[in-house]
Structures are given as C-alpha cells and as structure tokens.
Image 1 (spheres, rainbow, N blue to C red):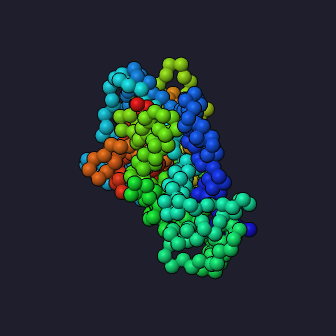
Image 2 (cartoon, one colour):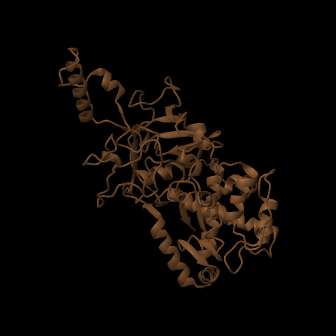
Image 3 (tube, rainbow, N blue to C red):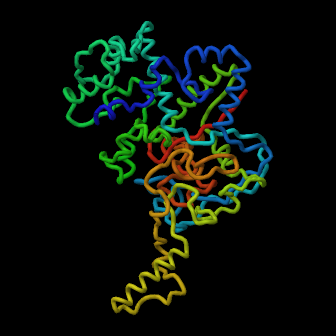
Length: 451
C-alpha cells in the first residue's frame, strides 16, 4: 500500500488529466473537451472565464502609482547564504547589516503603465499541469490514434507500451503488461522486480530529457536541493517528493533554470490566447516591473507591508512574521536572552555579566538568528502570509523570483527567499544567479499582458 501511494504522485501527470479531461487554465480547473470547445466558440463565455481567471490569479500595480525603494544589496548565493556580489566586501556573507548597502534609494516617480502580475508564485500543481500537457501532446504525436484509458478507467495496453517504449530510462526492465492493468500496479511491480527495493516515483523511471517544450527540458532539476542546501539530504522527504507529492501541490515550483520558467510562460500564453481569442502574453517580469509591483502602496489599503514604512524585522504590529525568511531577534528578545545569560552566570558564580540595561557587543554582533520565529529552511504554500497592496502573496521571501533582466550569463532575481535575512528581501536588493543554474531558493512569478 505504501508503494502504491508513492508510485502515483506525479499528480496531474496522469491521474486527473487522463480521465477524458484536460486542464483549462482560463476556467481554473479540469474541464471536459466539450466544455473547452464551447469556451472557444462562445465569446460571452470566453470573456467571463478570462475575467474570472484574471480576478483569481492577478495582482495590479496601476499607472500613476509611485515607484520607489529604500536601497539594498547586490548579492548572490553561496551554499545557501547571501554573499556580497561586488565591491571591497565581495564574497563576504551578509549577516545583519555587516556590509554597506551598495544600491542607493530610488527617488519616487510615477509609474507610466499598469503592471499586471501573478498574485502568487507559480506552484507545483500549476507547473505539473504544464508538464502533463506537454507529455501527452508528445504521446499523441507518436501515435495519433492512441487511447489512454479504457471504459473502466484503466490505462490501456497501447498507452503503457508506448510509455515504456519511448519514455522510460535506458536499462529499465519492463514487466509484461496485461489488459486492464493500472499504471500504479505496473510501476509497483517494476520497482520490486527491476529497479531496487527502494521506493521510486514515476518521474524517476522516465527519461526526463525527452519531455521538452520548444527544445527546452521542462522537468525541474531535483538535485538542486542537495547541491545548494546541505540541510536537505537525499533522505529529506521534501527533497525526495517536493515536486510530485500532493502534500506539496500548493508550494512554489523551484529548481528551474530561467529557460524552463520562460517555457512555462510561453505555454500559458498559448493556452490563454487560444481560449480567449485575444493575444495574451505571459512572461517573466523585467526588474523594474517587479519593483513596481513590489513597491506599490495604496492609501486605502491596510496591508501588513508598506515599503516606505517597512519593519526591519518583517513583523507586524503584533510581532508576527509577515514573510518567510531567516528572521532576527528583536532588541527586546536580545535583552531577554542576555538577562537569561546573566542569571546563569550569577548562579555559576561568574560576576562578569552585564548590568541588564544594555545589550552586550557580543550579542549585538551575532544578532542571534531567530530560527524559531520564522519558518526558515523550507518554502511555504504560495498563498501564505498576507498580500501586499498590489494583492501579491509572498512577493518578499519564500522563494526569490526570476526576472527577464540579465547581465551577461547572470539573471537578476528579486524578493529574497526562505534562506535569506530581512535586508536582502528589500525591493531594491537584487540577487544574481546563473541562468543555467537551478536552485531550491528560486521560483518565478509571471506578468500578464493583453494586446
């Protein structure tokens, strides 16, 4: 039973999509083929669906709003930690203002156009819908007459044979496929008889290099967990099952190269354009588009985060974190901690403790990373915490977000991640990541344009 649960979690990879249904991004769910055709031929229905989709999925930074930020850092990641990218402190880890900000505050100026941006980071469920659609399209090209499921809802012999002939990794032995056999039981038998006695997921049996969109491999590089974060070993459930297990379906997709995120945007552009009858372009934002969305403030909104009056500890008035980051102890927490140390020293007969009225330089220097207050070390679901005035969730922290802005072989990444400290989450800060590098700290949030 345990293997059955683990053998099928390529989520949408087959379970939902192949039940005579196809994911319809405009309607926000799985729709029958007849419903999709109706949406393409009924202008009123198309417009309604698109408006609903936009209302559910987009945030807005309108024209005329002031674009500004308070400065920040130029940095990159080194083994999961932000380090200074340029200048005399190059290579030095950024730990609570131990390096001067190298990005000056931006003088406020009015935005010339509206930025429509996804109100959430693209999640695993959404990305796997893309992977599923591309995979099944390739199966149809190989065999246009291919049927995926029989009347009982089981995968057909022709589908299983095509799957094993064209997409399994070289060297994977295939057991005899019987009519009416479910894919899950076939894979369970393969795991027992021909792989190892360890648990495997479906995508671990597939030749992922063959699942491409416009020549780009689209399956994430799961090795990013162990390469970039030493705390995530191959035995970590999140590293093993993050992409495909339903428990993580609402978590942000990560471990992608920039080309893979762009491929998703191109695919979604084609889907929305076909379903709406209008030219719709989904793309990675430029750095300035991202800054406009992140720094937008509304006088009517009472959101937890205002860039012009941001709390350096990323907490609200009740002391609760408003972003997923590596948090620092507040001065009050530091004093409490020092008081505890002083009492401990007195009980041990040590009279070198402080006077309790100030914080010792040693504690100020370390600033005691507060791992108990923030959910550091892991991403969280894309709709966590509270939205900004532009209705964007997790635009700061959680996973940093790709942009289309590049400098040589590096792309600019914004917003900071679950492995970053508060200073590098500022709208003005910019991280540099190689466009060919896939990291668990980096995801993406597209922008939407209708022409």
